[in-house]
Length: 205
Image (cartoon, rainbow, N blue to C red):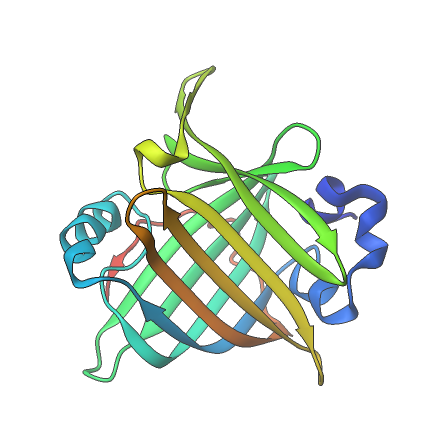
């Protein structure tokens, strides 16, 4: 069965290197990494608020042990991210992806709020460009300009030797510049399914 990313990329899926195809494969798997998270100090109160709604993380750090568990439930690809900090605290960031029109997908951080992104393959790299935030109210979907929330989202995933890949996520505000970034190097492994569990509340462990 085709994965969500295969459905969105269509023929461009075949242009992805093997490690990125493994990362976006159909079925349960886990990415293991060490992540860097950085943002300006003044962003911390906003990030705490956003984290209460299930988005992003309000702590910075270097080389943080990270697990990104993925599974498919119905038409959703579910993501469960866990970061371990040096003081022993763990933060989780959960979301689910659904396909949108054309080469787009929507990542929902809770049942109501999501980010629509356009994806493309360029020089063996997978690029995501934020299009708009969406608010889902029953069957009604309301689009919200990116700049009114945080800024423009970009993600770049590129293949590395040894079945690894690098990911770089950035939020750039039109006035304040880069306001959030996390990046790391990952390897993908197969893992057991979640037995039907998908989106769980994000928070601190």
